[in-house]
Image 1 (spheres, one colour):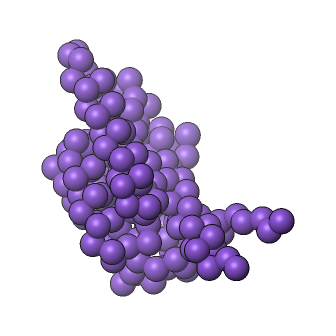
Image 2 (image 1 turned 60 degrees about the vertical axis):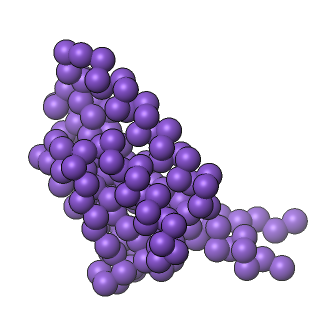
Amino acid sequence: MPEFEGQLRPVGRVALIVSRYNEVVTEKLLLGAKACCARAGIAEENVCTVRVPGAFELGAASLAAARSGRYAAIVALGAVIRGETPHFEFVAEETSRQLGNVVLATGVPVGFGLLTTEDLAQATARAGGAAGNKGEEACEAAIRAADVIRQLREAR
């Protein structure tokens, strides 16, 4: 039986959908995702950055990108930091659901780079700090998923 595993290599165009809310964190996630694209050998002209107002809008923009047929992979980048109200739970849960639905509806992989943290320190640690860069990790997952999908489609 054949075995398939996605590699970190050029897969075509990649859309990086990034929330402007909590920009001090999301810009670092974006830098990590761009670094991953470069490491994968994806040319800059094949990496599109799409900015949305907040995390909640990541789902709609990711769906539009996936339906366009222009992208092999999408990376959703945002940061939802717990506050004093239950708003955190609503945004985090609904955004997660929306992003999962994009994958199921279109077959285009979406790298999940949505941080859900208790405070800014935790978010900063995950955006290039002590806990790594989750934007880079989400991008790598999306590229590897796009590559394995391509392998499966081309398998004989």
